[in-house]
Structure formats: structure tokens, C-alpha cells
Image (cartoon, helix red, strand yellow):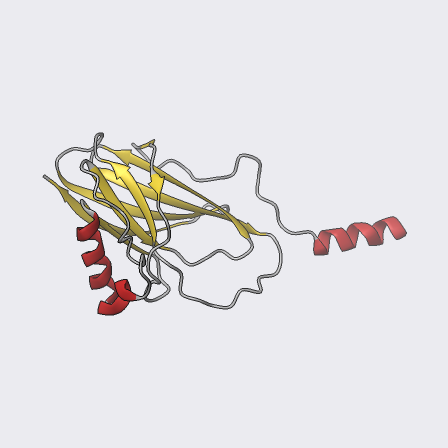
Length: 177
């Protein structure tokens, strides 16, 4: 009887675990690539997933301000809009806004095909009670080489994947001359 009670308590109180090898799924027709994630940027406006891309850091800053419709977004802190970053020729700058997952495991990766860049954010099962207050998250900056991309318009897609297999997307485009 005690054994059954212990098993019942474990089943009720044990957090859901992510399966072994769980993580982002590669988008169809793409391959994983190297990327750099920079320091967090300005606090975003709103709570829905957002993606903004540019071919230069100044271009990206302008698009972040436009997406937020709050001109002071880049004046909140001295390095709030990546002012300390220097433009690197041959790279695409991608800013994403994703709500925090609280107690769930998250993994990020970046993939590309010749005509698209995919920022994949994977969220596993929650690992306990979330005591986080609802707050607006900061933009995250990913820097990706343009070397494997075709010239012209390139789709830039944020994929939000879950352990359960669902995927939500947000996308934009960037012009590579």
C-alpha cells in the first residue's frame, strides 16, 4: 500500500521531462549553420513573436524602432540597440522577440537554404511552477553570414517549435544586393 502511495505521489508531483535528444527540428530543405548571438537589445513592444532583419546594424536599429512605433526604444540604455556593435560586411542581422519560457528548457539554432534563413526557437516541457511576473522581453540579436545565400530577396523566418510538435512562425524579408 505504501509503495502504491509513493508511486502515486511521484506521478503527480514529478515534472514532465523532455525526451532524449529533444530539440529543434531542421526546416525542410535547409541545413544548420554557424551564427553569433549578441548581447540582449532593447525591451520589445508587445508579447507576440517578432522578427526583424537587416543587412547592417544601423538598418536593423531603424527597423526595430519602426516595428515598435516607440521612437525612444533605442534610447532606454546606453547600449540598448547594440550601439557598441560595428557593422560587419557580409552578414545579416536578425533581431527576434520571444516571450520567456519560464521553467521550460529552450534551445535555439539557425538554419539556411539558398533563399531563406530560419531562426528556430524550441521549447520543451515546463519543469515546475512558474513564478515569473509577466514582463516584456528584450530583443535577441543573431548575426549570420550571407555566404550561403543567393542575392535578391531572402525570407527570414522565426520558427517557434515545441516538444509536442507544434510550430508557429513569424517572418520578414531582407534584400541582399
